[in-house]
Image: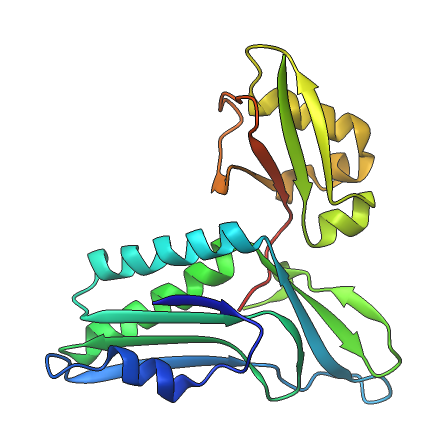
Length: 140
Length: 82
Protein backbone atom coordinates (compact mmCIF):
# COMPACT_ATOMS: atom_id res chain seq x y z
CA UNK A 1 0.00 0.00 0.00
CA UNK A 2 1.07 3.58 -0.62
CA UNK A 3 -0.51 6.63 0.94
CA UNK A 4 -0.23 10.43 0.95
CA UNK A 5 -1.98 11.85 3.98
CA UNK A 6 -2.45 14.99 6.05
CA UNK A 7 -3.09 12.94 9.16
CA UNK A 8 -0.70 11.39 11.66
CA UNK A 9 0.91 8.19 10.34
CA UNK A 10 0.81 5.15 12.62
CA UNK A 11 3.80 2.88 11.91
CA UNK A 12 2.20 0.01 13.85
CA UNK A 13 -0.84 0.19 11.58
CA UNK A 14 1.36 -0.08 8.46
CA UNK A 15 3.15 -3.07 10.01
CA UNK A 16 -0.16 -4.73 10.82
CA UNK A 17 -1.31 -4.33 7.22
CA UNK A 18 1.71 -6.08 5.71
CA UNK A 19 2.55 -8.75 8.28
CA UNK A 20 1.88 -12.31 7.14
CA UNK A 21 2.93 -15.72 8.40
CA UNK A 22 5.24 -15.92 5.35
CA UNK A 23 7.31 -13.03 6.69
CA UNK A 24 9.99 -13.77 9.27
CA UNK A 25 10.39 -10.07 9.99
CA UNK A 26 9.33 -6.50 9.23
CA UNK A 27 11.86 -3.70 8.74
CA UNK A 28 10.47 -0.24 9.45
CA UNK A 29 11.94 3.23 8.82
CA UNK A 30 10.25 6.29 10.34
CA UNK A 31 11.44 9.73 9.22
CA UNK A 32 10.80 12.33 11.91
CA UNK A 33 11.15 16.11 12.15
CA UNK A 34 14.28 16.67 14.18
CA UNK A 35 15.60 19.62 16.17
CA UNK A 36 17.90 21.98 14.25
CA UNK A 37 19.74 25.13 15.32
CA UNK A 38 20.84 27.82 15.74
CA UNK A 39 19.81 28.21 19.38
CA UNK A 40 18.62 31.78 18.92
CA UNK A 41 16.35 30.85 15.99
CA UNK A 42 15.67 27.11 16.02
CA UNK A 43 13.58 25.07 13.66
CA UNK A 44 9.99 24.71 14.94
CA UNK A 45 8.31 22.91 12.05
CA UNK A 46 8.58 21.55 8.53
CA UNK A 47 5.88 22.21 5.96
CA UNK A 48 5.56 19.52 3.28
CA UNK A 49 3.88 20.05 -0.10
CA UNK A 50 3.76 17.95 -3.26
CA UNK A 51 2.74 17.43 -6.83
CA UNK A 52 0.29 15.02 -5.28
CA UNK A 53 -0.86 13.07 -8.32
CA UNK A 54 2.72 12.46 -9.45
CA UNK A 55 3.98 11.78 -5.92
CA UNK A 56 1.46 8.95 -5.51
CA UNK A 57 2.39 7.49 -8.90
CA UNK A 58 6.09 7.64 -8.10
CA UNK A 59 5.48 6.04 -4.70
CA UNK A 60 3.53 3.21 -6.36
CA UNK A 61 6.36 2.69 -8.85
CA UNK A 62 8.95 2.61 -6.10
CA UNK A 63 6.91 0.03 -4.20
CA UNK A 64 6.57 -2.10 -7.37
CA UNK A 65 10.31 -1.92 -7.96
CA UNK A 66 11.02 -2.96 -4.38
CA UNK A 67 8.62 -5.91 -4.71
CA UNK A 68 10.29 -6.95 -8.00
CA UNK A 69 13.95 -6.42 -7.05
CA UNK A 70 14.02 -7.79 -3.50
CA UNK A 71 12.76 -11.05 -2.01
CA UNK A 72 10.04 -9.39 0.05
CA UNK A 73 6.43 -10.25 0.85
CA UNK A 74 5.00 -6.73 0.99
CA UNK A 75 5.93 -3.05 1.20
CA UNK A 76 3.97 -0.20 2.77
CA UNK A 77 4.89 3.43 2.19
CA UNK A 78 3.18 6.48 3.65
CA UNK A 79 4.16 10.16 3.43
CA UNK A 80 2.50 13.00 5.28
CA UNK A 81 1.88 16.50 3.91
CA UNK A 82 1.24 19.78 5.68
CA UNK A 83 2.88 21.39 8.71
CA UNK A 84 4.67 18.98 11.08
CA UNK A 85 6.19 19.91 14.45
CA UNK A 86 9.40 18.55 16.02
CA UNK A 87 9.14 14.83 16.63
CA UNK A 88 6.28 14.25 14.23
CA UNK A 89 6.68 11.53 11.59
CA UNK A 90 6.73 12.60 7.94
CA UNK A 91 7.37 9.25 6.26
CA UNK A 92 7.12 5.56 7.12
CA UNK A 93 8.48 2.64 5.11
CA UNK A 94 7.60 -0.88 6.26
CA UNK A 95 8.86 -4.03 4.53
CA UNK A 96 7.85 -7.61 5.36
CA UNK A 97 10.13 -10.39 4.15
CA UNK A 98 10.93 -14.00 4.93
CA UNK A 99 14.50 -12.98 5.84
CA UNK A 100 15.94 -9.85 7.38
CA UNK A 101 18.60 -9.09 4.73
CA UNK A 102 15.99 -8.49 2.07
CA UNK A 103 13.76 -6.54 4.50
CA UNK A 104 16.55 -4.14 5.49
CA UNK A 105 17.86 -3.73 1.93
CA UNK A 106 14.42 -3.10 0.43
CA UNK A 107 13.58 -0.64 3.20
CA UNK A 108 16.78 1.30 2.48
CA UNK A 109 16.09 1.22 -1.25
CA UNK A 110 12.57 2.59 -0.78
CA UNK A 111 13.47 5.52 1.47
CA UNK A 112 16.53 6.43 -0.62
CA UNK A 113 14.45 6.41 -3.82
CA UNK A 114 11.62 8.39 -2.21
CA UNK A 115 14.12 11.07 -1.27
CA UNK A 116 15.45 11.16 -4.83
CA UNK A 117 12.40 10.79 -7.05
CA UNK A 118 9.14 11.69 -5.33
CA UNK A 119 7.96 15.26 -6.03
CA UNK A 120 7.57 16.38 -2.42
CA UNK A 121 9.22 19.52 -1.01
CA UNK A 122 9.69 20.74 2.53
CA UNK A 123 10.02 24.23 3.97
CA UNK A 124 11.79 24.92 7.26
CA UNK A 125 9.86 27.17 9.63
CA UNK A 126 11.94 28.90 12.27
CA UNK A 127 11.02 30.36 15.66
CA UNK A 128 11.02 33.90 14.22
CA UNK A 129 8.35 32.84 11.73
CA UNK A 130 10.63 32.92 8.69
CA UNK A 131 10.51 30.01 6.27
CA UNK A 132 12.88 28.66 3.61
CA UNK A 133 12.75 25.74 1.19
CA UNK A 134 15.16 22.95 2.08
CA UNK A 135 18.05 22.53 -0.34
CA UNK A 136 18.47 18.77 -0.63
CA UNK A 137 22.05 18.97 -1.84
CA UNK A 138 23.12 19.43 1.79
CA UNK A 139 21.42 16.25 3.05
CA UNK A 140 22.95 12.81 3.56
CA UNK B 1 -0.97 24.26 -32.52
CA UNK B 2 -0.40 22.33 -29.32
CA UNK B 3 -1.82 23.79 -26.13
CA UNK B 4 -0.14 22.47 -22.98
CA UNK B 5 -0.24 23.46 -19.33
CA UNK B 6 2.88 24.30 -17.35
CA UNK B 7 2.64 23.58 -13.62
CA UNK B 8 5.06 24.95 -11.04
CA UNK B 9 5.69 23.23 -7.73
CA UNK B 10 7.53 23.88 -4.49
CA UNK B 11 10.34 26.40 -4.82
CA UNK B 12 9.57 26.80 -8.55
CA UNK B 13 6.13 28.23 -7.75
CA UNK B 14 7.70 30.72 -5.34
CA UNK B 15 10.54 31.57 -7.75
CA UNK B 16 8.20 32.32 -10.65
CA UNK B 17 5.15 33.57 -8.75
CA UNK B 18 3.11 31.18 -10.85
CA UNK B 19 1.43 27.83 -10.19
CA UNK B 20 -0.05 27.14 -13.60
CA UNK B 21 -0.29 28.66 -17.07
CA UNK B 22 -1.02 27.57 -20.63
CA UNK B 23 1.38 27.59 -23.54
CA UNK B 24 0.57 27.36 -27.27
CA UNK B 25 3.36 25.49 -29.01
CA UNK B 26 3.89 24.36 -32.62
CA UNK B 27 2.34 21.18 -34.06
CA UNK B 28 5.39 18.95 -33.56
CA UNK B 29 6.31 20.43 -30.19
CA UNK B 30 8.75 18.69 -27.90
CA UNK B 31 9.51 19.16 -24.23
CA UNK B 32 12.77 20.84 -25.31
CA UNK B 33 10.85 23.70 -26.87
CA UNK B 34 8.66 24.05 -23.82
CA UNK B 35 11.76 24.22 -21.61
CA UNK B 36 13.23 26.92 -23.85
CA UNK B 37 10.02 28.97 -23.55
CA UNK B 38 9.99 28.53 -19.77
CA UNK B 39 13.63 29.59 -19.45
CA UNK B 40 12.96 32.65 -21.54
CA UNK B 41 9.85 33.63 -19.56
CA UNK B 42 11.39 32.85 -16.19
CA UNK B 43 15.08 33.71 -15.84
CA UNK B 44 15.06 32.05 -12.39
CA UNK B 45 14.48 28.73 -14.15
CA UNK B 46 17.36 29.49 -16.50
CA UNK B 47 19.62 29.99 -13.49
CA UNK B 48 18.52 26.79 -11.77
CA UNK B 49 18.42 24.90 -15.10
CA UNK B 50 20.85 22.11 -14.23
CA UNK B 51 19.01 20.99 -11.12
CA UNK B 52 15.43 21.26 -12.39
CA UNK B 53 13.65 18.22 -13.83
CA UNK B 54 10.51 18.15 -15.91
CA UNK B 55 7.61 15.73 -15.92
CA UNK B 56 4.99 15.21 -18.61
CA UNK B 57 1.66 13.89 -17.32
CA UNK B 58 3.18 12.84 -14.00
CA UNK B 59 6.22 11.01 -15.43
CA UNK B 60 9.77 12.35 -15.56
CA UNK B 61 10.49 13.00 -19.24
CA UNK B 62 13.45 13.47 -21.57
CA UNK B 63 13.80 16.73 -23.53
CA UNK B 64 13.01 14.97 -26.83
CA UNK B 65 9.55 13.89 -25.58
CA UNK B 66 6.78 14.83 -28.02
CA UNK B 67 4.06 16.96 -26.48
CA UNK B 68 0.38 16.58 -27.31
CA UNK B 69 -2.54 18.92 -26.78
CA UNK B 70 -3.70 18.80 -23.18
CA UNK B 71 -0.37 17.57 -21.80
CA UNK B 72 0.68 18.81 -18.37
CA UNK B 73 4.32 19.74 -18.01
CA UNK B 74 5.46 19.99 -14.41
CA UNK B 75 8.52 21.98 -13.39
CA UNK B 76 10.17 19.87 -10.68
CA UNK B 77 12.92 21.59 -8.65
CA UNK B 78 15.20 19.38 -6.51
CA UNK B 79 12.92 17.35 -4.27
CA UNK B 80 13.20 17.19 -0.49
CA UNK B 81 10.65 14.65 0.68
CA UNK B 82 11.28 12.12 3.40
